[in-house]
Length: 157
Image 1: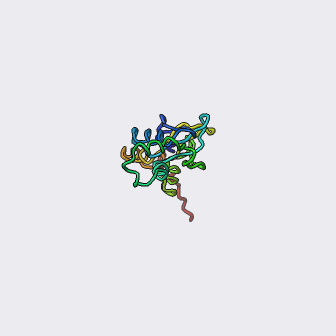
Image 2: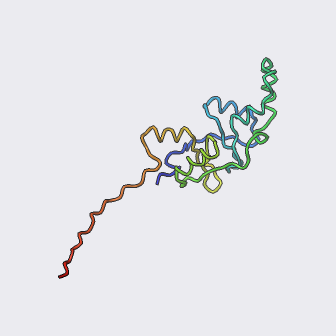
Image 3: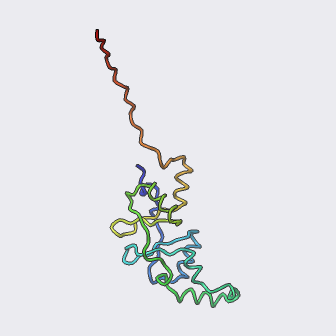
């Protein structure tokens, strides 16, 4: 069985509750990612996505007011826009289970936690890497084929 721990990103970027949405936006832009787990005392407490941050920003009417927008972004915290009841998986979770969760809930990632501590993240990109390497999620372990036992047939007279 292929486990999440075999394909997750272990060097996961995260933000804390009281980081500004401006900080979260800059991290996402710099690293070209769409979501960041949120931690408090190293424990996973939620997730913030690029959509959460985009929805929090003022309308495009202020497009020429860059200074005001930057000021706005520094005045709101991740805690104010994040999702608290985050769906997560454990390192031992089968990769197929994680894929099904991503698809069923139409989400881009699942933080990976062990005893509430963030230890990684599994994303759609990780799954695509898995597939591009020619792997199969439903691949069953190979078992030795047993030869059928020969049965002696007796003739009754």
